[in-house]
Length: 352
Ligand SMILES: Cc1ncc(COP(=O)(O)O)c(C=O)c1O
Image 1: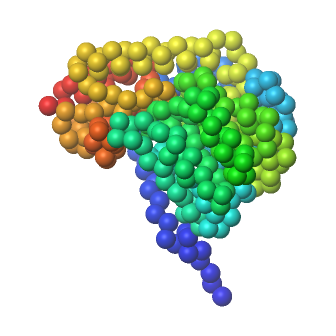
Image 2: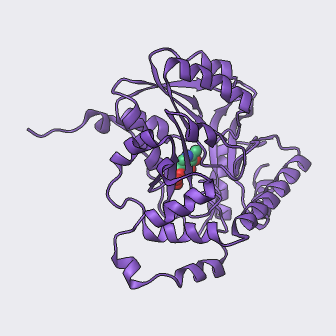
Image 3: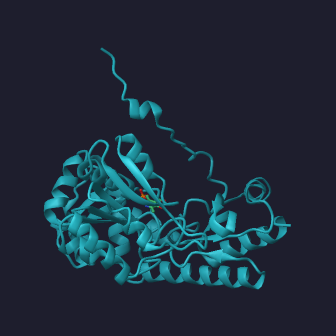
């Protein structure tokens, strides 16, 4: 008898990846400038016919990553983009109809996976002033909750949690045996991390990606950090040879070449400083303490600005509806100063 999974049939997905190449892309929190061309060329010189012909071997790069994180390989699982790791954690550590608590708005795939696998996603919303009251999270941590998903920092809100706040949340999760997943896709834009929890305790995971600061979204590479016993469960879901050789080659080169990471961080910081100063100068309210993105409250209609940026300026940004006291607002990815100048010029021209 033919069968179709009802959850998949009812799931609404939006695939919007096409025809973005001639645009300045400030809509998906990529690095618009990417890695320096000379760096790309030097890495590509290491590509051999054997490397392309063989299935990728993960051990070598996992060891390099473990050294970088000052841990050992048993705590790590490489994945084909952190979105893959998130999916496996949800699959392994929650059940059909299982209760997952997460903040909204945030990265949409948490809710998509919950729907895909028939989980019950319970939303904790932000305050009107765009802050997150952790008591609202804690009050949803019922004894039948199986998983709490937090983002540090959160995309798109840009907020972070202090150590004291996280510890308060963790103490409830430990007591009620709730698995905790902290998405740190935007780590390095905000160096504070909760990785020590994932390294030292059972049932705590951190997911990270090479798509953002590392500027490798086109290669697809991410990783999960957790206790070895939990990591083994995540690994069972991986397809054979799930991470590709090019991605690992680039990531290795970034980690092992002195200065590359620092240059990426400092050119991002210069762009962010410029954008914030210009927005302040021009009287725009904005929000986003951390991450490579900002919410901006426009003077005119947000969606109209997004449409005109695309049509007239070839710049892609996003609008978000009903973001607390900001109302309908713009979200723009932050990159090198020259791109922020282009965006600011366009904003001032179109937002009137
Ligand atoms: C919060 C968050 N987590 C995860 C991801 C997915 O990243 P990856 O490219 O590693 O799948 C994104 C991508 O935008 C994100 O914003």
